[in-house]
Image 1 (cartoon, chains in turn orange, purple, brown):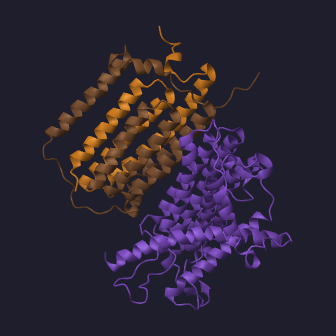
Image 2 (image 1 turned 60 degrees about the horizontal axis):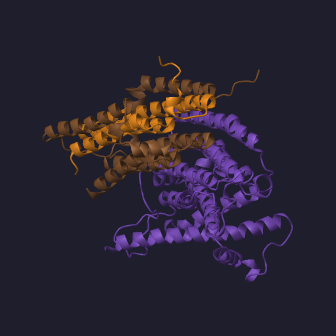
Amino acid sequence: MVPLSHYLLLSAMLFSIGTAGVFVRRNLITILLSIEIMLNAVNLTFVAFGRALGSADGQIIVFFVMTVAAAEAAVGLAIIISLFRHRESLNPESFTALKW
Amino acid sequence: MTPLLVAQIVLTLFVFVMLLNSAAVMVYVERKVAALLQQRLGPYLVGPKGMLQPLADIIKLLFKEELRPRAADPLLFALAPIISATAAFAAFAVVPFGAETTFFGLLDEPLRLQVADVNVAVLVIFAVASMGVYGIVLAGWSSNSKYSLLGGLRSSAQMISYELSYGLTLAAVLLIGNSLSLTDLVNRQAGTWLGFIPRWYVFLQPLGFLIFMTAGIAETNRAPFDFPEAEQELVAGYHTEYSSMSFAMFFLAEYVNMVTVSAVATDLFLGGWRGPFLPESLGWIWFLIKVGALLFFYVWMRWTLPRYRYDQLMSFGWKVLLPASVINLLVTAAGVLYFEL
Amino acid sequence: MISFYMFAFIAVVASLLVIAQRNPIYSVLLLIASFGALSALYVLLDAPFVAVIQIIVYAGAIMVLFLFVVMLLNAPHEDTEYDERVHPLLRPGPMRFGAGLAVALVVELWWALGRGGESGSFAGGSVTSVAAIGRSLFTDYAFPFEVTSILILVAMVGAVLLARREEPR
């Protein structure tokens, strides 16, 4: 049986890959995808701990996280669509009107 | 290599080959039944009564040239029919089609006639159906042609809309059946009331059965819900640019999806492999009869009803079928509480 | 045992390729592959319900939404010359900070987990049945469950409103 720390390490790697994606990519959709990677890494941690501690609470929290992620992805994509309609670009550097 | 392992491998291969055969048989049945409904003869030249027609079709498709539009994305263009066909076959992996059998005592323990017996079988079917949407979306996008793109997007929007009613009807059956495993659900439908009405769930859930079959027809993109691939509207929808074996894979995926939906409906609502007059070990004969009846219903629907227009189709799915399945779920829940089923 | 490493490898490689790909459609498809690998890991963790829900909700619904948006917006490829010339750690401003942060994150997490010593191995548990999860959801966690349904309703209304075209005056 694989020890718990292996799962946590995998989750940490996925989380940092997601973080790197958010900062490095310059396409709004890919940034949202990196956020989804981060949420999935957190889900993996929850399920791994739930299994290690022998309770079903880990899976229940994952259920809620997935629901929230779905709602957030839907609203985020709607925002991206309306932003695209304004500027015809998905580059976050085109939306600098509030910078001073 | 115990005999049980060998038997399981043989069973898996057998199911695969039988699904391929069923698609071929469905091609013939569809053309013959369509012809008889339209008062003409249908295929009659190739083989006795035209029964070798599917073979001729397959040979023709194999020899056609495999085309790819120049502007199409090569990786996705090749991947899309593979995803469609794989999802169609994978969904049948958890469908049981017979009782446990020991093959006349050759095996030590009984083998379930099911490729994989998972205890969340109903959800797995639902999950694999969701993955089948990708084949269509990618086919529409990668062909880089306007008919394909429109057809692909419309078809996938239709599929994910009707998945909701599909899932809610499944939830209502689960309320009565108390288990997610298909084998358990079939086993609970044993016995009869009053001596002659079998305890099938279709008698407890008539509305649910109708909604399930309607959503199933919409899921598999069959008439009257086949606007996205109708010849008169969108050339051929998402598979316009495909030829030869890729087209055959989409065709295969559509027919195998039909068989899977009919098989799942049989297991959930019509009692699976149970029936009078036959012993348990020959239950698969009843299974074939029931699935055959549902497939005939599919073909009959296609050649009888006119096609829904796309906006009528979507509004039917969201404004009629979804509330109906929610009401079905509520009434079932009330019934289960009251009658303590 | 070996299946854990295989699926973990697939998940990490697919996620790396997601953030490295130029074409957004390939990014979405690689993320679906990563979700599939994660779902297999959930099965290994004796959580079949979460595994199937991951496929149905994440890979089957949310990613289809992403794919639709990418196709409808005809999302352009990012310009590649800048990205190929300059390494992420050398770019100015927030990108350097972000890339450095990610590297620091990996190093810290690795150190922290290495220090944990002999952290818990898995207790002998069994597959959590769907019935147990359902019971817990409707009794202990009934309030968050209902609030989540309102959240989804709000998100639906918000998404439809935000993506609506402005009426021409």
